[in-house]
Length: 386
Image (cartoon, rainbow, N blue to C red; front, side, top):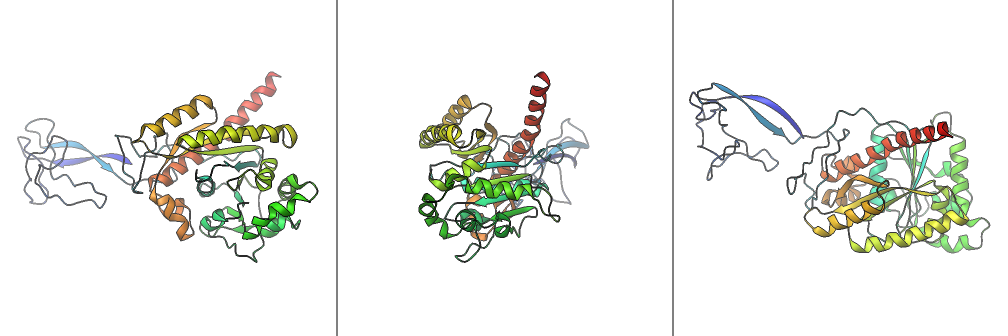
């Protein structure tokens, strides 16, 4: 949302502005709105066009009025609070602004590839939606991102418009067949700098096939390490690797935990999500103790936030109280646009970049990118003190 000043011509005596010979509709409410019963033309976004504006001083020929533009720039960020949006529109509720504009420059590259597993054993909390939209937002800013889809449903592959039919080379071939990860990666057609290792339905049986294999928990980790260690001449190193997990804590999710250094947890703003979080953290401690001591919960994102309900606010407050350093300031509202985008083989970032859902994910991705710089500074400071 942008705000700019324009000159409005007024008649002497401050009786209102007249445009191109049109008579003023009458006195309004004092904020530039037409009087009750008037029939102003619309802007196409549901806001009526003011036909007149009260002069600040009686007798003034001109006055400066504030005109609010609903246009937004998706690639720019701010710290504005997101809003609940059940219709998929960019309307504000309870007076909360929806602008995401800021003067901040482009996002920095992390000093090394950040591998983040996006997991929550509770289904329907927005894991896949968060994965693909954060990935698209990062890639849209020029960062190089790889999405690894290890959910047999293949929803992340669908949202990125990547083929994942039965015979397509996929993560299944990497985990079970030992195929190099590079051979299954496909580019995303709608977003530059974004790639995907797709999932096929074959992954549904991978849980059973992995049981009898040696080092079954580390197969994804070894494949990813080999890929990151030998970037091709045509391709620079990746900045982010986001791993989308199934809604369970089976061997597929364990492989994702072992392969990553950071755990990214989306939490739906409802009570059951809090119960699921406590169970997830218990399993993370087991992974840290036996398989991956470097794993840590680095990021928590509140999703499906509805600002009109006390429950969403209460859940958000509880999570922020217990995880003040991990929870992002941004919350993602409910939005029909977010749900519609996968049916077009797109993320909401490309499907409707001006929607509240897209703007919220862009802002969340911006926070994640900025945290990489903060973490680097903290690490350097700690080493200097040591």
